Image (cartoon, rainbow, N blue to C red):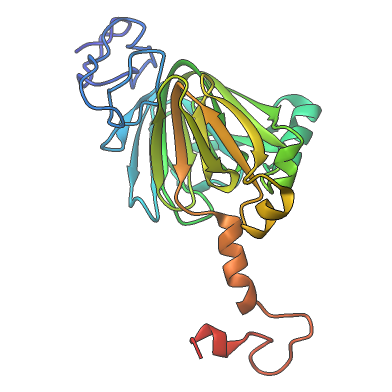
Length: 301
């Protein structure tokens, strides 16, 4: 098919023109829904979480491809001349020599403070290809997967540590996550992302998709959340009837969601992983050639 704005020939499943950034969905040229829930293309326009199953697609003036998943994923962005993409500070792995990097405090001083309290950096980086096309690659700091969500005038909530990059046309704000989220160990804030464009989110481990029917209730450990639709209501509560039982169960605070909507869940919890590694870290009182590392535990002795 061709872009109605600039005439560029595009793949039949393109949602944005890779040259001018025109939204093909708004032009009524997006591919029809065909597939089972949980697969690319199942949702109607304006609802659901659309993720291309082959990890490839088009954004506003760029194409993207996700490679080496799902343990060590890398997002490769091919920018057209003059086009840009935003990313979390420190997410860049490599880029072409003609890519210009600019960092700024998103949302001013108060917005930057909110991002810092929410576990994010105060700055957001913008990568722009000058005078010619260019490439920039992104990766999360932990082993895991990357999902490219193709948003179409939608609103999602994203766990602060899961935001990786996104279209410059998306609005990213920091929102209060509720006082209980502090005790859940996941920070006080979540990110609210809205608009149309490509949103890249990352996970620790693989990404599991869970679709909820209207009225269906589902509980997720807060350390395993990646993103969810705004249509999905949620509350934070104790994992069991009492605080003592919740704490001794190792769960503490959990999120209870009510459908309709879809959740993205990461299969590993970085806080739990850190707890497993803690016995192998050097202690302040440790001494000797091993630097305080318990080599017996390390080698299973």
